[in-house]
Length: 573
Image (cartoon, rainbow, N blue to C red; front, side, top):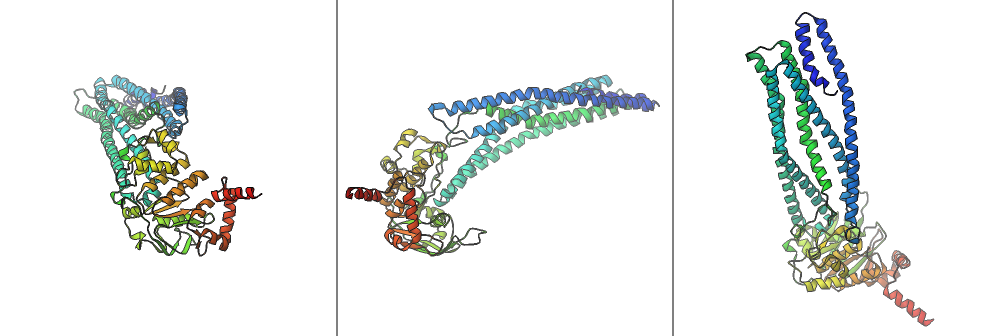
């Protein structure tokens, strides 16, 4: 029913012209045109039925793909007896399955419409003029045939483009996830070089795909326009003349039925069809969750530090000076920090405390160089931090934020990428012991085992970042609540290791043990910061006393001094 208009259109026009209007019988001509209108209505009803038939095929396909995706995801999630995250499964279950459903329905409709239209046009043209039918059939077969033959290469190019796009998106995610660390450690250049390589590979894949898709234009030209030109030439110079009605009938077949069908077929197969094959292949061949998300990054792809990071075999302290430092975020009405003055001697250890939102993390960012003061200067050994190149900044300080950045790679790469050259196992063993990473080393199968960031807890990621900073040659370590996800015992052990490491240490504290162990405490309260020892701040700062009281109440594990005092009180009783 859907193909009836394609079969009858040329015949009705030819008969309306030759037997009606040119024969002096306008009513006969109008009758043939009215018949064409009725046939078109019948074709519309047939199109509706074809759509319902397509749905009867496509919907079970969608259900089967959903079942397959869920089964594969659960099977991989339980591999090895432990649940692993597979964030890509959500995309497969929602976006990719729906894409296959829509593409399959569209492609099936396009192919069927072309097949019926092509057969109808060939039959109709053959009844009007056999030679004209050959002139129509031959170029369409050549154009569509050549395009179908080229589809294999187009599919490969489309797959390469899809994978390149995924790689580009994954690399952008990796860089954005570690942007603060990349800036703090001066790794902008290697990160940009890596991203540039991935972007160029994506561009090459897109260009290759674009070149192959020019075959679509060629197929449209051969299959859609060449028959029209050949028929007109045959009508003008053919050995047997064609009547006006026959010429108009054949042109109607070509213009109204054949050329739109060829165009829809080429575009549908070239876009929807290829997308269907690629996506369906990704669904059926989808692997289990890979470490780190979309793909596993080999060792050579991990962000490597610049060679200028090293400042010597052993880190030494650095003098830190803040001169009337103020800072406000763009669009902010008030300064987050205003007129802060601070001087740290080389190797000094200071804890920064204050209520939430007072500017502690902002101060840490200023010391790390990830933000530049609105007013004032941050000096490291007398040199303005803002004037130093990123590589030189990284040589002077290491910054460990609250949300630690761990990339997909080996444990050795994660622990040692801030060092100048490879780290010997003895030094790495010491860092592993200091920060309680022995279980993780066993879990990954040694230092050369692959780390899956998604499989790590927030505390484990923090321990890796702390050990990385510990092994770096940085002379200033800034810890912005870098132990907040660790249990109190692990936090005490980690901060003790950082204190024993040569260098200047700034800790944004959130437990009393951090502040009590520091040589000096800096209390931020929105005004002029108060600085002094723990005992002095207890005596002079109401805010600090309140914070210490709050920490003492909330602490699940009291600090060693509190335990000692409590035991003494029990003994005295």
